[in-house]
Length: 122
Image (tube, rainbow, N blue to C red):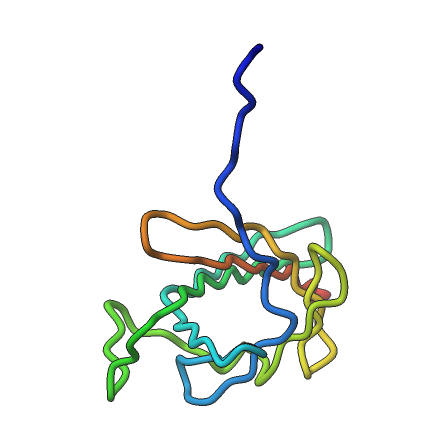
């Protein structure tokens, strides 16, 4: 009899994330998620300019008393709350739709990666 392949159990992504501090979100289970990185890129697309924002969130068991980002993070473009609409889409309190790119675990670190593409008319 062949051995079956077993994947490590991965919980569902959080149903919602509420901002409790500039760089900290809390989910429905009281777990803390820190904004580890925000990437922004802009590219022309015809007569429009597309801006892509990618947010990397990491689940933390202990939260630093003060924000200590490795790089300056501008969270002005992030909603104060995200709500899971489907298995791969979050809605922000500002009405934006964010795509869930990744929900995985690397060692002891659980991570979420969300992105949004915003089109602006040139």
